Length: 453
Ligand code: OOG
Ligand code: NI
Image (cartoon, rainbow, N blue to C red; front, side, top):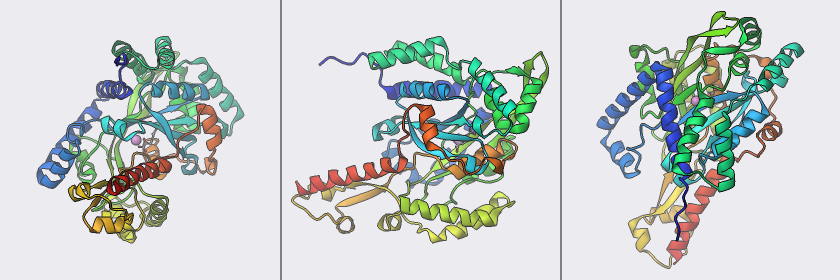
């Protein structure tokens, strides 16, 4: 059999995320400090919890603990978004999920480009949360036209990046050398530009409508606005941020700390004010870039997710203006309505699990019982929660807002439009819940077949 001359897309993604991290650390030194803080907290957590260390080691997680989990960009047009879809496909990343941020006062809708297969996720789970600006939500006709004009003039991709994407599509892959060139060229799209493409007045007018609009429209490209490593103890990392000179956002987003972690908890240091040279040589500043950390738990079923959304809403009614400790205390209390053990979450159909055979299960044959509770009670089968790989719209809005100076506007609300997003993207987005359900089903079928055999 001849070997494929192409580098695996997983490896292209791995090279790209490593290069992006190096670039961002150089661009935003405080992000490097965040990585050091997270590394220190992770090491201390592992030392204090040998059981956790053993588990992570057994799952092959220790080696890639320090790999970034996600980043985010914002683009301005359908052409940019659809070309990005093709660019991310070179790295085995596909659009999953639709997020309507207009509901939270931010004039964008979004998807996450991410790996989908178990093996790809295990290799390197790097995702890019990608938002499309919704100029149609801008009230002022003149401003909307001005923004559109500026956006049509720019090309956020280098000619070589475009060539390599086409080559990937026609050849079915890239060689190792081509992949290195591709990573270099693709990075150009995500780079920061100190020079704005517009004059200060134009920037100001767009900024006055919404800072996000200025951020998307006034620069040569969609600079990466944050990267996000994984922490094993987000509460501790948040506590320590000020001691290393960081200004953390007010609260950790998402569910409270639990024995059985669910979904996603996130926090960030606030975006930095950076100096910008505007067309016509005026000096000014722009605030866009920050650093974030995340801690993930189990993926919830539609039933579990409905309960999460309900509890989150209840909690949010009571937490306005509270500091993080008080906020977490309220959430803790509200979330007692959700059982806090893996087994209860599984029995009640609240989360997705991956089922596998124990040693006794592997030895058993001719067992046609398909009652999972019974098989688990007999010690033949074990269930492991499936990790949530996606994002949370309310949390994302919280991250956006704390980095946009909190200027949310209700004027944009109630404008979900998945069809328009998919049309701009040039492809449907994959339903994230269907992916978890499929993975659970596949694991069930595998073990039932093996037990019956
Ligand atoms: C994206 C904010 C959302 C997350 O982790 O929820 C996000 C942005 O500010 O562009 O990254
Ligand atoms: Ni993020």
